[in-house]
Image 1 (cartoon, one colour):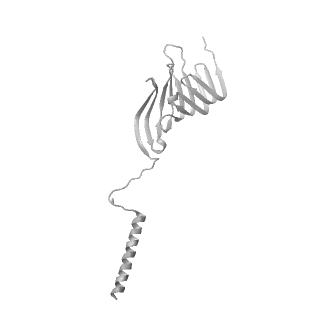
Image 2 (tube, helix red, strand yellow; image 1 turned 90 degrees about the horizontal axis):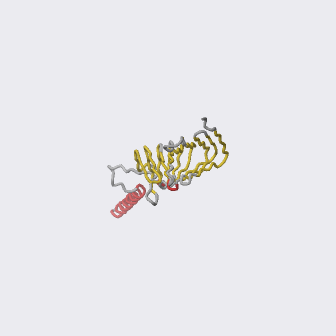
Image 3 (cartoon, helix red, strand yellow; image 1 turned 120 degrees about the vertical axis):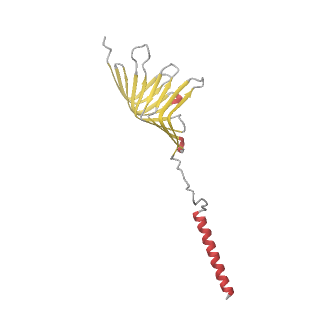
Length: 195
């Protein structure tokens, strides 16, 4: 009888031990019962900045671009950065400055390529001491390459200058050379100044 009781106790102990090990393996060890474990997604914001400025210089040490945003958020996934109301100033070697603004911006893998959308505006300010020459380009979205001083869009574009208005679809803009190309459906109007 003692052997039978001992055998039943042994089998019961082995079963309890086996079930316990299975539960531990299945549910894992939890040594921090009083601490809450926080898991973050790669898509979650991992950093933010307010009133952020980013300056980029060329190989000669000259300022080539400056980006400002009132609020910047960063996600680990693909090193993605979101910008609220970004303002990008691109300087060329010909002392021609362009200021690009938008409602939103996003860059992936650093700032080599910046997507902007929502009321995108490129403005070449009037040069001091000359006749008004302000050039404004508007579109719904564009891709900026600040390091290359280049921008492009496939969207509708309107270019306005004093006494002139040009519309088209798609644009490439090389700020270094000052060459801007409308890609298709270009139309323009010019009204000579009144003397």
